[in-house]
Image (cartoon, rainbow, N blue to C red; front, side, top):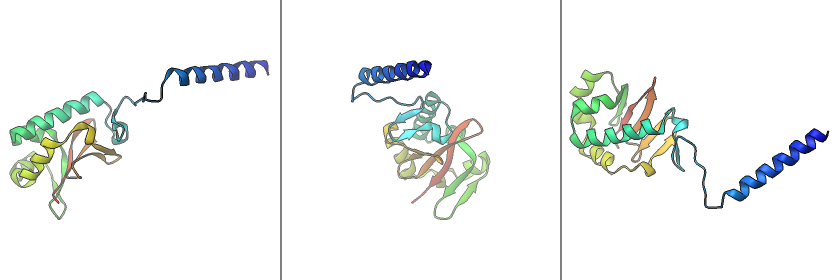
Length: 149
């Protein structure tokens, strides 16, 4: 009984000390949180650093508009939705349809996308208004879906 009182008293003191050591403006973030609206944990991404590298690589590849660079960032099969859903099966299929998939509008959306404006959910990380979704297949972060509205 005395042990329970001591543990209870110790726990109360620790909580009180913790509360007073953090002011109301301090926010504790999860290790994989990009910002308050995007916790990569729910998307299956294991590493914030790995995602940020992917984000940078996507921006660079998009700016170059090089299919050989972009294909490295795709998770196959990739869903492509230009009105009716299609699957891009592999690298060969992707390169053949590259200019249809990556339109000027998609490239512009990628170039304007900021990390602090990404939206995360269990289906992945959303770019723009849902034009592009990033997900994990196996351990690889990659583009899993492109939607043309």
